[in-house]
Image 1: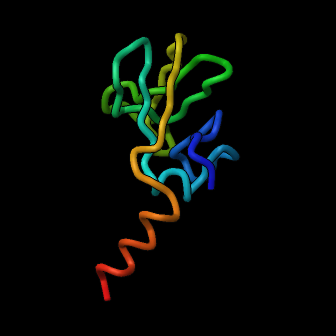
Image 2 (image 1 turned 135 degrees about the vertical axis):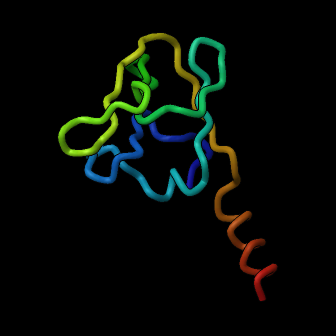
Length: 92
């Protein structure tokens, strides 16, 4: 597994950009120099994030989102395979 997060990632399981393994590692997002915790989807190369618009939902119960453009930085919050091995040892 690489130490760089995917260029495009979504937390919606029905999206083609959904990646469970990357989400389990935790992905940190910095948008316009501010760390964000409310990002639903992002694209580093296209320079945008998608965030929920309050508590509003569409007719299918999914949150309404708004697309914000600007510089996006992403990183993994937890290590990859090495950390997973440590967790299994602690559980034994």
